Image 1 (cartoon, one colour):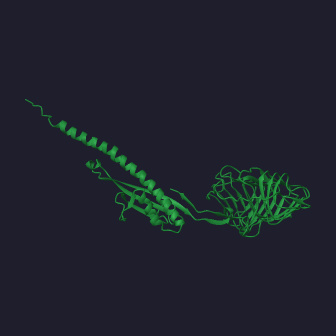
Image 2 (image 1 turned 90 degrees about the vertical axis):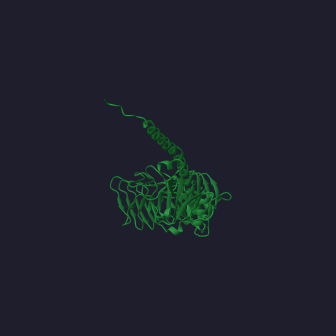
Image 3 (image 1 turned 120 degrees about the vertical axis):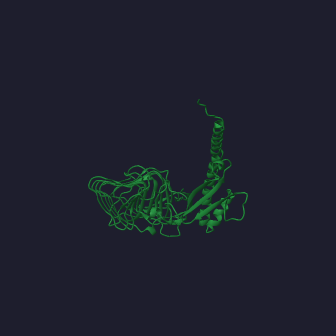
Length: 415
């Protein structure tokens, strides 16, 4: 006769496994939540530590001491420290330059790594006595710089995205000595070269933020070994540092001469051929008709509103302040970023422009039939810059004679 085996005790085993499962779920919810909260706090501490270290670096102070102090104030005391027992003991590492990642070896960057161990309450039952969090932050300490705008490029289109930041078309011709060309657009049509245009850059190449450019027709491009280089760092827009020239009094005409000051209407008034030195603030159109002539040295033209319309047969010979102690040394024509009018800058073979033409919100156009700017020691910086028609432009740029800007030190969190 067969007897049924006893099943007594199986329920106890199931209960034990059930308790283990409940403990595991409790560990996941409570200990996991504690670990997540610590990771978030550690990341915040790493970010602020990187900022503090970067600031100390710019101030020529000990970035390590500043960083460790900030980490401790956020609750993470380095294991090598002897104080702060009420805070979480952690391994706080500060490296300048970083020892890993895309910025390894670059002394402008500071890497902070915080490793913390979070004790568990329930997880030890399942063999997990602690959870380790490791977070990282990288900050850039960019020192203040002084120099010509945009690395001294002669033609710069600041448009950050979209087509035709810099455009060459028609039968336009361009030769540049001492500088290059830069398109700030991240679109492949940001640099557009078409038609039968002829571009030659002798001392620098053509740079762009995008990885490629648009080319149509049969343009001739020769950078003499400097190349057309993509994937360059994009410049911030709006520009972080712009001049602020102001005018005193009213611009006054005396015979064929004009004194500096504010002027409203079409500029220059009829009959004026010479500008005296100083700052001219114009509310209206800067218009030069066929065969008009205008000269002036140590002048700054501020296009507060309105546009520029120079006929290709006009002769313009104007130069920026040449005294390096002047706050607007090298600044020839400027328009605030709010002025979005078209600036048509043409002239004849006798026209010379010396200084920076800085119009961050405007379209600069050099076009027309036989328009010529020859041997100009200038920068043309606009929202967009276009050379078209049969324009013939020659720029011999000396970067040290252009407008020099000073950019304050910057701190930025990159990771």
